[in-house]
Image 1 (spheres, rainbow, N blue to C red):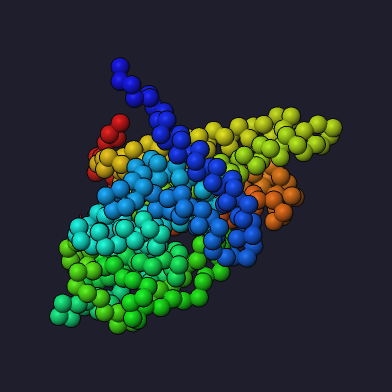
Image 2: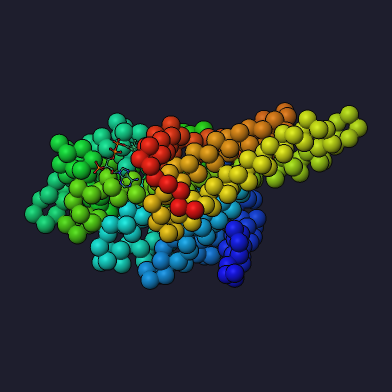
Length: 388
Ligand code: COS
């Protein structure tokens, strides 16, 4: 028998969870309501995560990062989301923004930017456009060669942490007639001339994470800022999402767990008809379903994280399945947590309505759950088998 724990987290992974939870209890959770109310960036969380090296844990040690594997990164994001989903976008977006570079970029480009990401500068991902949402290949942002340089023009929409991040992976078409085969990826810096940002969107949830348009107006960048090969950008973008949909699943599991924890505590305190409402079987059944579904979502998410780490052939299916299932669970569980708290749950004096609003985005971003089902069905019909 191997000494590897059978179907359980290793001691190292458990230690990471405990370390992140301690930071979140002290520096993230206490500010979550205020961050939401004021729709402001979670500076306290950002600083605490940065000083503990949890802001971009996926960056390999070779580039000065913490070198967390995919499961460890999931644990970090899950624990932060349990306290504040907005703050969990910091490590999630940093992974999303930098993964195309890690997948397709030259060694020089990786050295240049991953070290600065590890040191604390943010990295956002610019794929979506006003007319390229689910139809991500319909890119209108144009990149044109000019001598040794590239010139970018266009508008990106729904860009998480825009303005806060120093670096942007930008998908743009270099051959408009070739659809997905004519898309390339570039690293653009916030300080490049011609880069600007729209007003922050007024959102239902994740109010602490700025979502803005990003404009490229004749942005001239050096030729070596192209990521990998010309025409391969869409492939890098899709491969990236295979991995990062697992991190959205982690956010969903985290916020669902946070809501369940709060509902469990409340149900044991709240007295009606002379006893705690947790003593009523009707409420127990609700809590049991919440716990069961959170755990099922967690197991699928960790199984997907293993595939992300190993780069298994069935990652595309598992990433989509984990994201879709966990986000549907997060919506259901946070909504039921509001129900457990009754009228109190519906007010901003308690955290569960924020969790319910924050959970909603996990069904939408990094591909709607309808797109996840398209992805899953295509994998199933192509005969991709589970690697377990
Ligand atoms: N890994 C590697 N390559 C991939 C891939 C993946 N997961 N998914 C697609 N590709 C490749 C395909 O192999 C295909 O190349 P070939 O023609 O050589 O086979 C190419 O990319 C185009 O793929 P496809 O034909 O499937 O593209 P579609 O236009 O049909 O789009 C969906 C597919 C809908 C799945 C895709 O556009 C998508 O994921 N949309 C949602 C985008 C999204 O998540 N946006 C959120 C932005 S981040 S908040």
